[in-house]
Image (tube, rainbow, N blue to C red):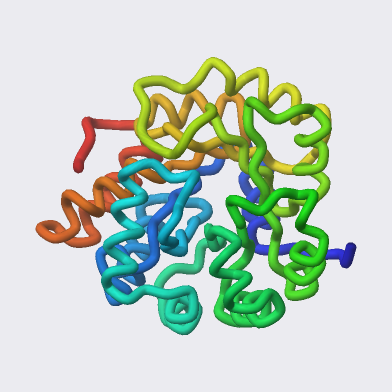
Length: 272
């Protein structure tokens, strides 16, 4: 495989490690509530304290996503959001948000766009990495080669139900960080972090030196802290998307910034 130069994602984790801090990764859906609002949302989550931003590409058949993110995808698609429009607007959004950015997509839109064209346009637009949720490491050789040629990190998912052999393949195919799913099932807020998280992290720690980020079901400062005690970063998605759904129209991006700051600092009650 081609060798990546140090990416902004890798540099962020290096900085976190040196300062003995843990990361907060925040997910938002591109085009929800509108493409025009997405730049302000990215700026808000960055200002609230997101170390890395995941920008979801809306897709009509989001098998890994729960109802909150499904609704966001439906709103974005109804508003005319496409992968091509997202990549076209991303340079403008990057003027407002400089945090490392991961495009979070299913493989179908990437395949329809054209793998080489996608990697070139994503890199030139300012993306730092890509997570294709439904792409298995066994089928990813050309994908990984192409994205790394354009200096994009390739991030894959590991799950509690994954065998050690599968987790090793996921680790080998990943750069930037490895995304671990805290529990089986789709995205969505839960009352507690799954008991399967610690054993999963312990298994993967033996396989790779990559930073480990844990997501799916995390929505409170207490859960963020709980995950950060075990892993290098916590990922929050559905809770942010729900906040956009319920508060953006009345309070704007400021409400989302407060929510991320609340998650980051862990003080006070939920502001949204």
